[in-house]
Length: 119
Image (tube, rainbow, N blue to C red; front, side):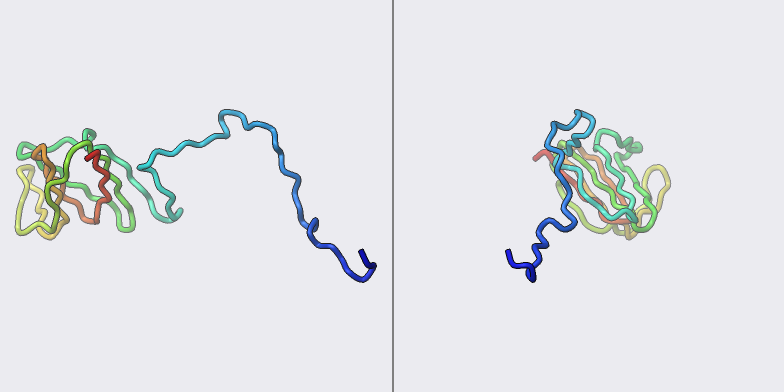
């Protein structure tokens, strides 16, 4: 190599540690988990975690900017925006997102809910 030409390939290089990692260093993610912005709070729930009122309704309120991920082991039958309606527990859900499941459970939410079904 000529004295006037510098080889920069090793500048800033870090030697890789090729030893096996300790088991605590491995991170396993389910297909349901996701990478998200640190400013956004992600709430992950399973459909079985929700306790419906007498009419089978659940209402979720999350702060603005929060994302809700729901894992459901059953079919989502329909979704949309609720018309004028008050739940059996007395919550006015008019204008909220509504999700109906095959079991009869109806989920209302201020924001959109990302739903992963097992179907």
